[in-house]
Length: 113
Image (cartoon, rainbow, N blue to C red; front, top):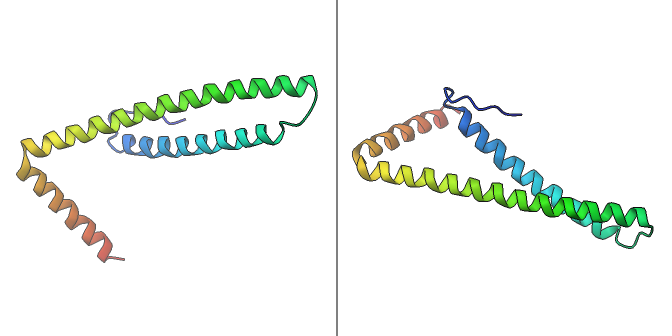
């Protein structure tokens, strides 16, 4: 489990990557579980039917939770983009300087390879 330490500036970016990967993995898991439920639809027995019903309920809840998390992450990303846009509009020359500095740094790193 990833913990969040506000004093570590590199942590939020790492958590975002981990969260994106977790969402992708969870979507794949839900799709696989649905495929498994569909493949076992012709299996008989009351116990199997009960387990299938429980699994379908769990999948429905998991999908709802996944959509909620995805919506929350989308809102956070929009807020960050809006903050960045506001900063660029308030301080255009500082933004150009930062972008140029990052471009130079990336160019130097790429040229070393």
